[in-house]
Amino acid sequence: MEITTQERVKDLKLYKFNEELFDLLKGSDYNALKRDIKQNGVKVELHILPDKTVICGHQRLCIAKELGMSHLRCKTVTDLDTPEKVREYVILDNLLRRHLTPEKQAFLLDDLSKQYEIGRRGRTKEERIEDANSASSIENVLDKTAKMVNVSPRTVANARAYAKAVKSDPEKYAGKKISVVLKEVQRKKKSEDGKKIDVKSIGITFKLGDFTKVLDDIPDESIDLILTDPPYPIEFIDCWSKLADFAFRKLKKNGFCIAYSGHKNLYEVMKRMEILDFYWMFALKHSGNTKLLAFNNIVPNWKPILIYQKGFKKIDNKTDDFIEGTGRSKFNHDWEQSLGEIDILLTSFSNEGDMVVDPFAGSGTVLVASKKLKRVSIGAEENEDTYNIAKKRISESIE
Image (cartoon, rainbow, N blue to C red; front, side):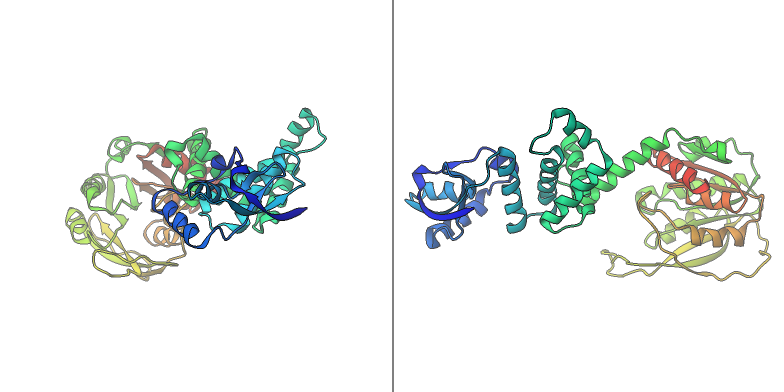
């Protein structure tokens, strides 16, 4: 039940958890609201309990007191007889009425769902704990919360995961977007899972560390194909010199070194690969959205794939130098390539039983594809988190 009345400002008091739940306006935003109230009055009524406690309208009341206003229009809500009910009411009011950032909405959704999760009436502590640990109970909580604010259960689940991450490590996650935090959390979980996996047991050699060191035990002139995707930014340009030297020493006669490259530093990349024989350049057409290159105002719709050989021998079958991209996921690695295009390169430039090496293995795409196509699959990755995530992906893909 709700009753609208005029209440004396001096009789109204603030509810204790408003500042805990909501970011208060500061600086110019606060002053703008204050000027508006001074000019036009308080246009939105405050929500209060029967004892004159303001549960919605905290800052409007503070400004009214500063301005010396005598009365405010208030809506008295009479059926909120527990703190949990009050908290639920306040959260719902703000979620449905206020324009909040997705991140602030996530914290409120998390808080609201926790109210439904622990229950409010007539259950023992043991019953509440048992219910909270039940999978069906969590699903019901997500559904109920979602229906109350007209969002999807997945949105509520993401909100809970986001809030949990920020609360557990505010220094790392606070201020970041929900999508960024969730991606980092999931990558961390995959990395932890990947630590336990030994991919050698499924026939793949995958080593952690700088490829010039951890793959140096590969015998000289024993590799049939190097297929890799080195980093593109200019600060990593020395990687290409190391790759060229590695390929020259380790490739068999007429073996191939194939590497994806960005556009901007292509000239410098090709200079560093001159120790090998240039065979051809393929064009990989991008699939999906493409990004504008700010430095030259061009939107690239394709990517170079450089093909070098140690010596020269013509491949047996004709191959088209234009590859339609099949789309790619950036979940496992920011520069992750798709399996479809890797399959084309593998079948065009290697045979079953050949040794295929990826010195910059990233999320393990080349290793997975090589194993699937019955090649000897060897790779290295320098970043430990990426290495562990790749091990998990490789294991799941092969299984």
